[in-house]
Image (cartoon, rainbow, N blue to C red; front, side, top):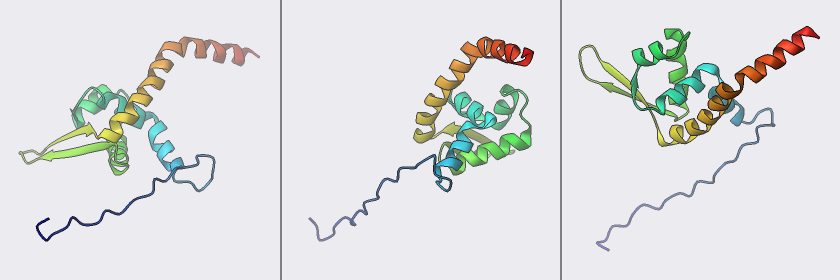
Length: 131
């Protein structure tokens, strides 16, 4: 070596959650992932990078306030990357991080299952309402 050594790396112990424990932080992650708007954002961003206005237009029914809140929560959890381009007006783009991409593929399986089986669920609801 040339007299300098690489800094010692701290080993970080992987923390596994227990979703059934009341105070486990994994519950707040579950809340973020399974909220209606966050799930739709994650699946939409699997297609690629989108601007705020594109997301607002394509996700029917979401208010701009709720979209902004959802994107902020997903960014804080490390699932979404927000990039601001220095233009006038500023151009802001959203994409998935590697962690977010991994998560979104799982959420996409769930949303695809729901789309395929919605008529069955509605049939059960209708039958249940008649009881």
